[in-house]
Image (cartoon, rainbow, N blue to C red; front, top):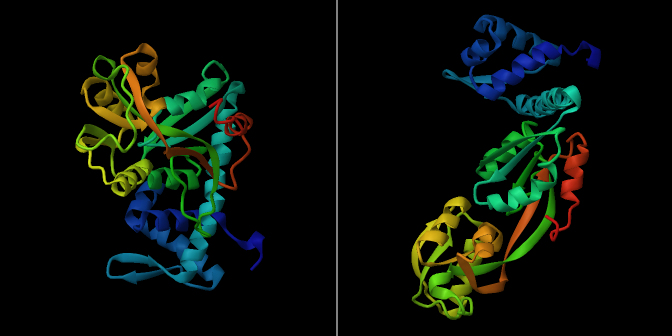
Amino acid sequence: MRLDQLNFHHLFYFWRVAKLGHLTRAAEELHTSQSAVSAQIRQLEDRLGEALFAREGRRLLLTDTGQLVLAYAENIFGLGQEMLGRLQGRTAGITRLRVGSVATLSRNYQENWIRPLLSDPSVVLTLESGLLEGLIARLVQHQLDVVLANETVPTDPDRPLHCRFLGSQPISLVGPASRWAGTTLRMPDDLDGLDIVLPGPRHALRTQFDALCTSAGVSPRLRAEVDDMAMLRLIARDSGWLTVLPEVVVQDELRAGVLVKVGHSNALQERFYAITTPHRHRIELLENLMATSPDEA
């Protein structure tokens, strides 16, 4: 079979059925009948000479060949979606940049990172947040241009990704100025029994902090654990408890003197990464952002 004999319309129908896992839902999405979708896939199977689906009751399961064809279809139609997104973004000289960030990442850090674009009238930003795996899935499908994260992603030959290190910063201990101004505490040595707020268990630095306390034989009194950095910032500001976090999360409160830094630990670091796909169309403004040094981010 030659490339010019491959019917990409049939391949598209197969891709939607494989993604949705259901003939009826695919037919509804494609505004056609279930029998028409089935016929298109049968013709593709006839051309390829192998079955793409196996039935198990009412379920459609991909065969080994189906899995292979799906992997290529993802790239083919994913790149098509990226092309349309880029072309639409170029309308009237506009560049669209779609940025995802994990929910545990500081919004202040994200804003600092995109700040060079905020005064550019030719840029339209789409900002999303969520769990890393969900954002990566959208990145692979070319629905995002970059994902900002505070952890790397596992190596997967079936899902190649580029993970660029953007920088890191030490973790600080902060508290309300009304109570802690002028106080310095060693972290973690002086935290035994003190009321403390920590990032949630899913945050990359939480494991580091717990291990540091265990090795020092220190047991702070946990009052709250918070995944969302915006909520962690509010609790740090309003609770009166000590909080362990990256300074960027509460940069405005520190500047205003509402919070003070009571201590910090170089042993605890939050690292920042920009994750992209190797097939990503080059976007100059994104390349410039990823090349920015940590001190400038």
